[in-house]
Length: 76
Image (cartoon, rainbow, N blue to C red; front, side, top):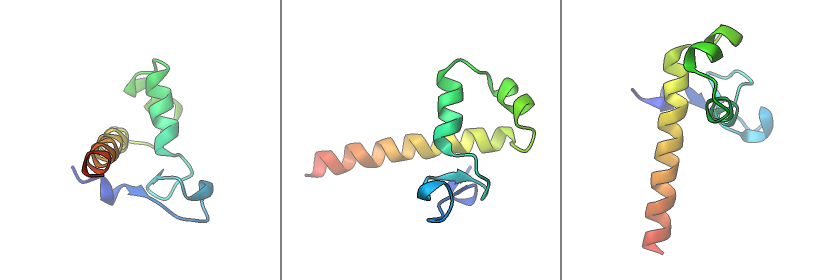
């Protein structure tokens, strides 16, 4: 999967936070729901405009961002 086809960043939407397919749902929103204990199916039931691929793209984006942060700090 390539999250870059799903996660979008627009300066005029949600303060430039990474969003899903140009919607107003942010990666942070999805990660927060998962962290609070919601299952993927519960999220999909509450937000039918999302797909399982969207949620997995959020996880991939977060993992990639964490990796880049670690590499950046290590290189400094």
